[in-house]
Length: 226
Length: 307
Image (cartoon, rainbow over all chains, first blue to last red):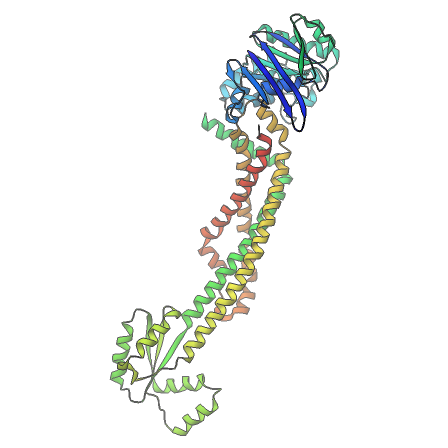
């Protein structure tokens, strides 16, 4: 699903975000990417969604070489990847339904399709009763679930989540992680970037540890080792 | 698919205008002020052109018939002159009227008038009043009349022709100078307007940066992200033009008495003049406004959709 071959990313003037990273994530995997702040975890996410281009190396997503992806092709890549960030990135003046529908509206989906998909994804994340609420009327965990619902509307094969529990308490954190596990069980590959030790240790899934832009550990059913 | 996207783009554009209501109002006011300055320049040009046209149509030249000319010869001459394409009208003026006109024209030349009195009789056999289509054709007509065939019957005084031409040249010269000055001021104003409009639109788009970020994240195409802002620019331009139309006509009616007072018989009906050129007047300005707003939006939004 994701293949990084000797990928490096440098920022001017002399910042190394990633150095010679080799990575292979198979379809249906649940992978946690851990590491301390500033070690290059988010850079990996940004490279996967083509927000950045690698300085060196090659990146292939779902068989698509996106190393030198043309800007016009980026939207099509992003429709195949669900993205969840720490800051919820919801539109405050839109309801839950509208926020989730927005992802389909901006991609030209017909109204009928929107009307049929939104209730489905809101059911998956457990918000089918709160479709008419505004973000400020929801808890942090619920807001993050709206974001996850929005990321699912294109039925992505891959879901990348960058610190999705960073702003949540332990109860909401558990709920979000459970939701990600559920999505993974439905067949979606999940890449979770986190520095939450408990989350990683409880998952008992593959863990990739990054330090100073390099992979220092890659374990199946791994633990948080830093 | 295309029609769905188009309808959504238009919907998002109107939503954005309404959600940022006061910012939209400020943008529209700024564009309207910029257009108002362009309007002043256009109206001035129109007025100068009309005034020159009026001066030209009112310009005619008397050519006196010499004492040796008979009435028959005068009629032949009139018929000949009427055949010239440059001549609009030829009229015969009676000897009495010719004398009166001559006295009027030379009222400051005492010696000439005294010598005329000394003659004790009207020396004129009459005169011809020539009206031409274009003041610049006078030299051609004068050279035609200087031919030997006519020379014996005509007393050509090209002084008046020269005076008329001088008036027109002076008006034209002033008008060109004022136009140039107006153009510089207008360009300056338009430049300031572009900068202000550009920044206003940038602020508007800055308030949408999160929305743009989300659109990019969920896979909206760049054209879909950009289009609502371009439509927003067009809507701003359209509203500004409508406001301009509402402002301009009462404003013209208001200044009309002052223009009449200043230009007297050369004055122009400003409302009628603008109404007559309605499409050109407002169409050109709409295009100018649309180009400014659309280009500003395109540049401003580009910053946020860059990969």
